[in-house]
Length: 265
Ligand code: FAD
Image (cartoon, rainbow, N blue to C red):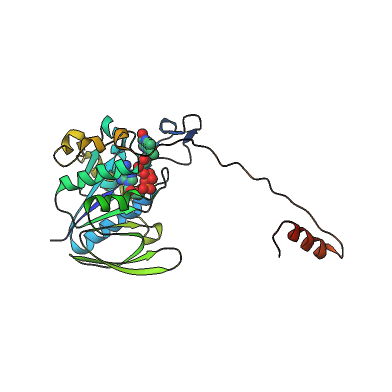
């Protein structure tokens, strides 16, 4: 028994090192090595803890270039049982809708599952849209910003969702999807033995052809992406203004300036 938990993981460039090409509005992915999206490490850890508690299996799935294989090997070293890489030129240029659609089709192709655990967001795209969109494509419920899993059984999960204005205790019937925050756990470090095992493990590679029976291929990649990026720019820096008030009337002068600036009524 146990649960089949699926964790979508994104291969992202090391954000400390990557360069950004302002002219084309694109990240120069060749300028930095790649890694698992840091938020997805928390998703993997949550999935592996559920497996340790209830049994079952964890599948990691990533859509990306062939190099994304290294992210999946890392996931295998962290306790994942099966890893699938979706890679094909037809998946390239995808916006969040096409990305989530492709991932949802691959999950459908996998057959039965109980829980999908996504990261809250990625460090490069940073939209936080892909998780909830996968749930919508699959017609299952989802809970975002999950900072704690209180209880999990074979058919239900009880979680704390941190929406900023308060904590919400939410119960969801499975199958469902949660997107987890960094507060949920501290991901463990894989041992050398885990890494060696992962190096030899098989990573399944699926192209668009593998999904034709569960997908409309015109919804993949650039052609399936309705988003149009008009312009990418750095926000202009606003200079700071400093005035030092001295003397006995310093407070009166300060109040005068604040009223002038419309900051005091
Ligand atoms: P979020 O929504 O912030 O991610 C949330 C969670 O979803 C992650 O923590 C992870 O669990 C899961 N997840 C997200 N992405 C993946 C994935 N790929 N595989 C597995 N799990 C995932 N990006 C490119 O890399 N190449 C391109 O050519 C490209 N072209 C684009 C063209 C357009 C017009 C637009 C608008 C965007 C393009 N992007 C491209 C960016 C791409 O849309 C996003 O990288 C992608 O949709 C994921 O969105 P996000 O990074 O905001 O993920």
